[in-house]
Length: 212
Image (tube, rainbow, N blue to C red; front, side, top):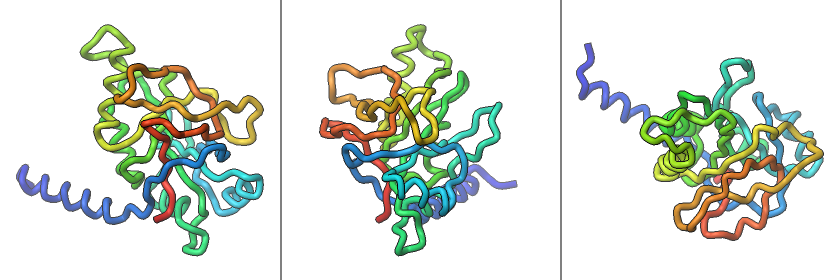
């Protein structure tokens, strides 16, 4: 039976291997660029189809709802999506989406980001239609802020996206431009149904994963 020290050593080794496999880097998202949300594995044909229509980034789900059968984002897919076409990739920028449930913790989100090889600094969008159940506070706003803060402190940018976001093309597209920022006096909690990057020139910018 493995000791606690041996278990920790194995965990550290696996973490080191995973970090070494991260091929993408975080860069500020380009304003006015168009993207699409997809809830399945992105294939070369699908990527080409959207790029020909002017789409420059995609949003992929990190987790699967209990009632859904779509595939969650893997590290292999992250690398394939973000690598340049000259290196065998799709040449798309990428941002992950996590749909919360009542039992979701910030650590669940952070673990999913690491498993999907999402580089530090990238914006993870949260669909909090079903928010995590408060554990230490009766104020749901406090719980949401603490939830986002934990993910932010792990090195990721955090934004909220509306449940109505759907695969492109969309007819009611708004703008992705508000992310959690502890350096500003207030935070917008409005749901965002967006496929376009806004000005992205505030203190806390939106970051996507792209090829290194």
